[in-house]
Image (cartoon, rainbow over all chains, first blue to last red):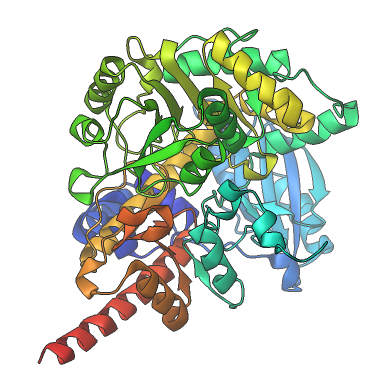
Amino acid sequence: MDELLKILANNALESRETIARMLNLSVEEVEARIREYEKAGIIRGYQAILNEDRLELDKVTAVIEVKVTPQREGGFDRIAERISRFPEVRSAYLMSGAYDLLLFVEGRNLREVAAFVSEKLAPLEGVLSTATHFMLKTYKRLGVLMHPETPDERLAVSP
Amino acid sequence: MNGSLSLRDRVARQVRDIPRSGIRDFFDIVSTMRDVISLSIGEPDFDTPWHVREYTVFALERGATHYTSNLGYLELRKALSRYVARQFGAEYNPETEILVTVGVSEALDLALRALINPGDEVLYHEPCYVSYRALVQFAHGVPVAVETRAEDGFRLTRSMLESRVTPRTKVLLLNFPNNPTGAVMDRRDLEEIADFVRRHDLLVITDEIYAELTYDAPHVSLVSLPGMRERTIFLHGFSKAWAMTGFRLGYACAPAELTEAMMKIHQYTMLCASSLSQKAALEALTRPEVDVREMVDEYRRRRNFVASALRDLGLPCPEPRGAFYAFPDIRRFGLSSQEFALRFLQEEKVAAVPGTAFGRCGEGFLRCAYATGMEQLKEAMNRLGRFVARLEKAGASRAT
C-alpha cells in the first residue's frame, strides 16, 4: 500500500506538512495526491474512532448473519447493495462459509433492532434466513485498543 | 579495617579510573524532572511482537526454566545459522561457531577478553556506543579511538585507520549502522576496510545490532566480504529489530577456535543466556520479515521527518541512514554539547544526549533518538525550533 495511505489510515489528521516531511515530498504534492485518492474513490471518508462504551449512548449494535439467494444477473451484489442502503446497516460484507452476508446493524435498543430484522430485513425477497447476535463490549476497533494501554516503561535515557 | 586506605583506593585500578558513562550522568539529571520529552532513549518504542511474547508465556508454562547448553539451545543456534546465512551472507556451523549470549553487550565483552593480551591495541571509531572504550580497558587492552567526521557522513575510511594503526594493533572494532550517528557503510566502504584488515593481519569484531534498521539500501555485513569471516567475530541480537531489549539476548558467530575461547569465559561467568529469552528468540526468527518490515517503514518516515525538521532549523545533520539516531551539528551556537543539551532540557524539557557521551569528537553534536512516537517527535522539533530561535536572537544581540 502507498505509504501516504498508510499514514492517513493510521491518523487521518496528520498535518500535510508532517506527511510531506515523512515522505520527502512537498506539501503541494501531498495535497494533490490526497485529492486524487479522494477523487478516485479510494479514500472514502474520514472518521474518528470512538470508544462508544464510554459515552453511555442509547445504542446497541447487532452482528447479523444473513443467508440470501443470489439473483440472476446480479449475483450477491444486487441484494447486498439493497440491504446496505438501510441507514441502520453500518457495515456489510460478503462472506465465505455458512452464511453469505455479515451485517453490523445499529439501533437505539434491542427492540428497534429486532423490528428492523423482522420488518425490513427478513421479508426482503432473496433473504432466506438471519441470525442476530448483540455486541456486549468493544475491546478493539479498527486496530485500536479501547482500553488504556500500559504507559511507556522505558528509562528516560538509555545508551 | 584499619582506615589507612579508603575503599575507593581498594577498587581495582582499571575499574576505578574509568569514568561513568556520560549517559548515566545525563540520566541522573533527567530523572529528577517531570514531563520531559525524551529523545535520549536507545531502544525501540514498539512493543515486542505479540507472537513472541505469547510464545514466551507458553514456553514458561511448558517448563523451559532450566539451564541450557552453554552455547545456547541447539535449535536456536540452527535457526540463527540460517538467519545469518540469509541476512548477512556468511555460513556458520551451529554446533561449533555460534554462541548465544546475554545481549550483544556480553558478546562484546567475551570477544574482547578472548582476544586481548595486556597492552594489545584495539582500534575503534568514535563517536561510538558508550561501552566500547571501557570494555577494552576492562580487558586490559589499549583503546585507540579513530575519529570519524560529519563531513564524511561519520563513515570510517582506510586513511583514518592507517594513521592510527601500530605494530601492537590486534583488533579492529566496528559498529555500523552506528549508534549514535546513524552512519552506515556500503560495500565499497567496507572493501576498503577489509583491505586494511588483511594488510595489517588484524582480527575484527563487528557489532551489527542495528543491521535490520537501514533506510536507503540493504545492510552489507563485513563477514560477507572475501577473507573476512575467518578473522571476524560477528555480533548481533534481538534488542533493536524485534524491540526485545529487556530479554537481553544476543549472539556471536566466529570460527570455532574463537567461539571456543569465548565459550570458556561465558561458561564460567554466565553459564548460559536465559532459557526463556532463548525461546523468545526462536519464535522471533519464525517471521522476521513481517515483524521487522512494519517497524522499519515507520522508522524511515520518522527519520525523514526528523532529518528534514533539523535541516530547516539550520542544524545540519548527515543523512541518518541506519539505526534510529540523528546526530545534528550544533556548533554554530558556540555552546558545548553539554551546555546545549542541559539548557535545552531545562528550558524546553526535551532530553537529547550530548554528543560527547560518545567520545571526544562528539563535541558539537547532539544525539536525537527517533524511537519515539510521531506526536512526541513533532512537539520536540517545535520546542527545538523555539530554543534555537532564542539562541539565535541572543547571539545576534551580542554581536551588535
